[in-house]
Image 1 (cartoon, rainbow, N blue to C red):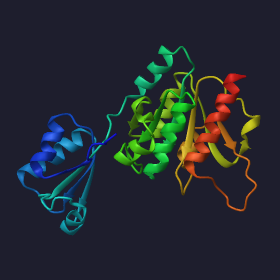
Image 2: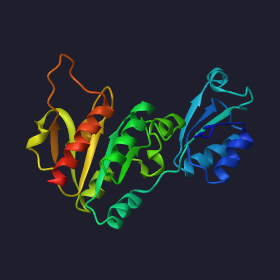
Image 3: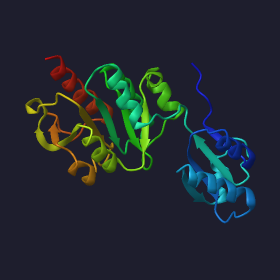
Image 4: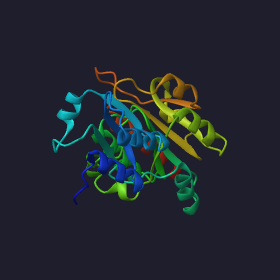
Length: 246
């Protein structure tokens, strides 16, 4: 399967992408550019809650694949994002308690792709990622997911902590993986649940961790102090599967 090119270069091309309703994850704008087309692009980006990065021309020259960026480069999602309500609706349609993965700052596209693949196989109803400091649905993510991205909705939200609070009102409980938690086998992970997996380097952020109802420790016996994020997601997801089956 071929995946679409995600880099959009040039003022007209970027403008047309916004006008066509394309999901633009972020744009890079040449620092100091203030002419009409650039102002229009940045206005549309702000309206769409797209991340705007102001960089030097040299950075754009390095990023450009065509050599004709005209002071702006956009990165578009390989796949359209879902809404959180779409994920909940999927659980309702299947008459199942919601099972959602929330990823706190996963920046490696291979990890995100692997997590999407595992989550789909484990019967999760969707994944939620933050808009900032996290990888989006790039072509590498799509390829690494081995097709699972076509079946599992992924939503992008502005604030994970706020989203967790909103989902708690809908009856979900939340568990995150952390070394300081309780042994995961001793926790009751049945029912409507959100599984939170932290970033590759920092783990789950303090603000998000404080929102969790459970903190789960994955038993480890080696000399290194952590697991790859996608591996941790797989272990935790299948403990939830095991408990649901029982």
